[in-house]
Length: 239
Image (cartoon, rainbow, N blue to C red):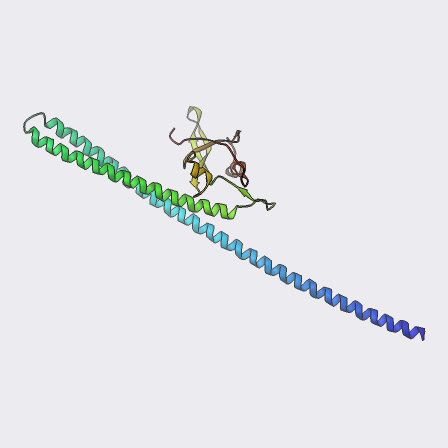
């Protein structure tokens, strides 16, 4: 009869509704599992990037310590060269008196030693420069790897420099804070142009003064869409 058919139809509708709910619940469970797996992957990559950054910072500190040691040895070599030059001059003065030829021979020997000391000093300086370039390249590569895109996912680029804030003497000897180039990235446009060096003070970026700005703000001015250009005004260290 009609009531029995209606009951059967209602039963089938109920079964279909239950089946649909179970299917939806399974899809939701699968989606949640996929999301959790993706989050774990992102967390693992973030931890790996943090570990790489820590290792790079440690490598830079070790490089800086080595550079300080090399600098000390270079300064000692300079002092030795100065003493040898002074001694050679004294021997030349001695040559004006008796036994001048023997004194001249000693003076030539001392001058030769001074020249050898200067050669050693130049060699040490080249070693220091090479070590600094390698350290700067490593830090620059890590910086590019970890900041290669902005928050919207648009690819951006810089000129291959890392910056830091330091105290310096301003007008009338007053202490001011300046933005200095701390490292150069191997293959970066700044290193290839040879117009910006480690230790330079950044003055303007595209005509905008960086006075009083934080490092992150200056980096934001320098960075831009890949392939774009930027004009940086810098003051050479000791200039």
